[in-house]
Image (cartoon, rainbow over all chains, first blue to last red; front, side):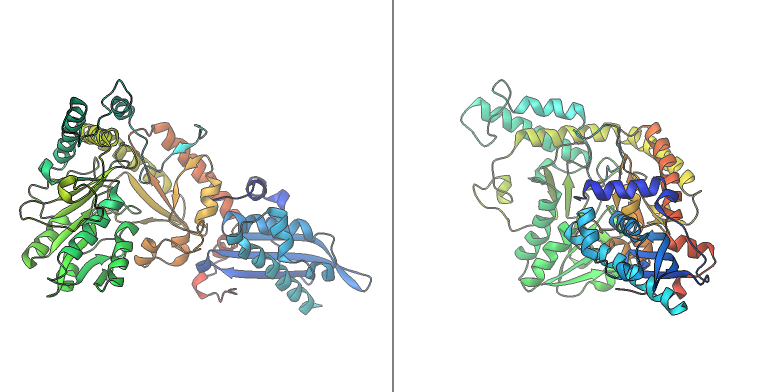
Length: 134
Length: 406
């Protein structure tokens, strides 16, 4: 299996220091938290992404992110990579993130592109959840 | 070179060549060695090579209590399986067109069966029970007028479970159906006595038993006689069943490996059984661990476990200093969990989280200890990362969740 060094490093760093890489949870009931969960155990991957936002001008800004991912090495690396992209972004900017950016950042092999698609879905769903509460 | 700090626990995939075997092989390659073509009848180079090939044939026959004339050299167990399955089917096609095998055979049997289906044969794929075992009664029920061959493995390569060859063989004998057994995982692990076992064809591999890759053999019984149609033509070597110049260094390697296997089987088994017990005891202390296969009816060198709430490929990546194999084929293009585990009726998520540990002659107790300690910590950390584990701790039954699949 030809994983890039980037995938392997991201996976290992996340595994070895989960707190530093935003592994964890927020209380999903809090009003300023949006939760997205995508995938299924039977398919081999489940991503849970939570964003904590604050209003800023006429939009909202992502202040903090937590995630947990069950899946192959590249699924975990993709989630972790996405998290790095999110903090400090407005919801509009976060919505505009495309899976291709994760593919490029991690040099994902073609058969693992679905991991990046799943990551993109997770942020879309988290934003939807957050917006429904506002 | 692979970094030797990596612990090798993938003996069911392949074994290193025993150094005693390698040094013997070296005698059959170079100008000062016996490099002759065993088919050369006109000079001593040929005679010497032929002697070596025949001695090796005896060693292979001896390990399984067969007649050396019943051993046909092949390039490996895959070729032996192909030769047995296609060879019998094509030779006896006027007698019938029905073949019986199982869903958890090695691809070396399943793919030839698929090919035979394209040629007009009918194949029944038996379902194993939850432990990966085919019951003799299933074979009995599946045999019909047109059945010519039953092909089942002895030891399953993913689970280590054993089929009851004696009982199945009695049924095939009674029905006048040939019985082929893939025994690639068996040699040097369990005793096989083909003088009494009612099996007609049996496939062997050298590289699962400390011999070289690229060489195997097919046992083709003489009494009662089994005939097969060759796959490879060109010179009529191996009594017409497998043409092509024999490779004495490979053959000598397999012979020596099997000779040593006979001498050291008990010793190897005792040591490996001890490791297996220790590994199992310790690994079972981790919560939500499941054994795939049948602890009461399996070889100790293979141990297949599922770690619930953790995905197999990430577990293998986490165990980076340990060479093991995953039941999940997520690393291949298919993204499917192992067809073997699926056939046992394991939930997909458990099939996705399975790891096969396999021990061998060169495994050390410190390898077992180190693996256990790394395994414990990696499973813990991956569970900390797993939303499924979190849900489980929150008391959510994952089977009741509606998943947002993509």
